[in-house]
Image 1 (cartoon, rainbow, N blue to C red):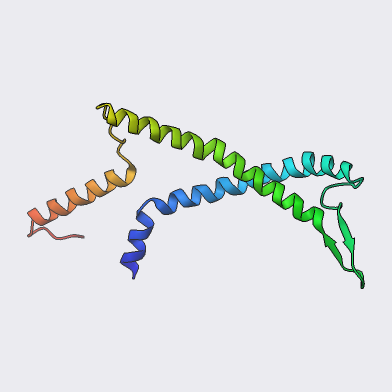
Image 2 (image 1 turned 120 degrees about the vertical axis):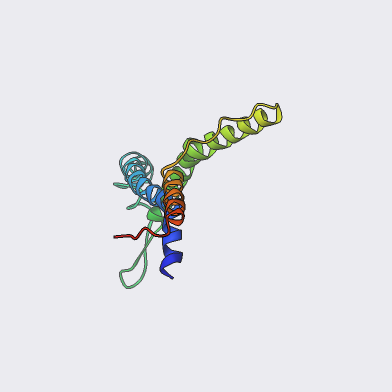
Length: 141
C-alpha cells in the first residue's frame, strides 16, 4: 500500500493537480472581484437594486426568499471562468497541438521534451542500484 502511494505521488500528476488547484483558487478571487465589482452593479442597476444578488428576490409566505439574482450571478461567474479558461489555456494548447501535428506530418519532428527532475532522479536511482548490484560485498551504513 505504501509503495503504491509512493508511485502515485512520484508520477508528477499530483504536483500538476496541486498547482492547478492553487491557480484556480487565486483565479476565482479575480473572477469574483469582476462579478461583484462590475457585473453585479450593472445588472442590479437594470433591476433598480444594489447588486445582482439583491435583485430578483421573490418573497414567500413565512419570510423566506427566493433569490433568483444570486443564481444569475453564479451563472455569470461560472461562464466567465469557463470563458477565460478556454481562451487562456484550452484554445492555445489546442493550437499548439495542431501545430505540432502539422510539423510531424510534414516530416519535421518536434524537439525532444526537456529532461524533468523525475527523469533525472529515476536515472540516479537506477545508477545507484546498478552500482550496488555490481559490488555485492559492499554494505550500506
